[in-house]
Length: 322
Image (cartoon, rainbow, N blue to C red; front, side, top):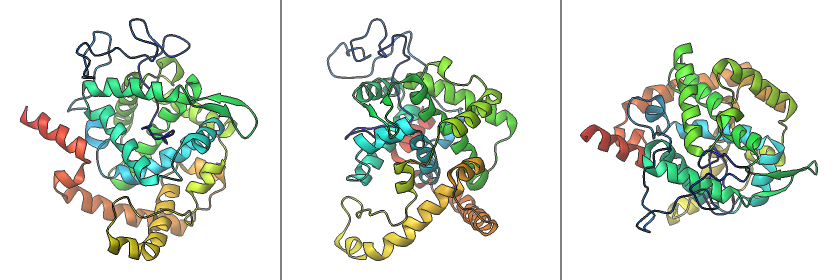
């Protein structure tokens, strides 16, 4: 779950597991990828590849749910609060100039990780290749590179509290066993995305001290954080919008932007809101809980083709037929 550099997909970054300093593995080319034997780019299964996700996993049920639209922005906010990640997005992303295209490409990439089968492995490799070119200096003058293991791992690690917060408000809270199961699956997802296990906390119990240390020692209210929390940030109408929608956009956009910022702020862990100095009142909490009650009531009653994003829906249909 991350913002996208240049005009390419991103997300909780990554590719294949990195064994060398430059992110490559034996038997692959300099990008970390194996060429398809037929030259078509078709995903090919190899013995040492991570196992793709399938029905029966928690992520199979929740990663393609439309409620991701509400939970993903909070994860992105935690990501770009890291000075290195924020600088990379500030300097290399098209989130200002092509917000809708960037969001669509990022969502498509994210869906592949869980629902793409062997294509998930190839997408992970592709993402690492994309991130090889992302480098610069952050606002403190420190050099950064997108594939620095601790930065890359942090982007992926933000998924855990974001899923927990979304579950608490928008579906149902996960019990302790489910939280461990979810975290184990996120570690598996990290394997697919090329995040080395040694760069991630090994258990839920190790995760929270790690999160607390990142929050208080690394994260700050970066320029990108401030922009994403500004409801007045100019956003054009969606790509391909009708003439009528374009005409109504100046009226529609302000309340949608305020709702977006409100939900994003509310789905941050409370300690993160406090760290960033974001106001959150008892009234705000009651409003978020009412909003969550509506979402919990409406979404499960939607037909599956509306409840899941397209790639997730098609993968679930194919799995049920099989």
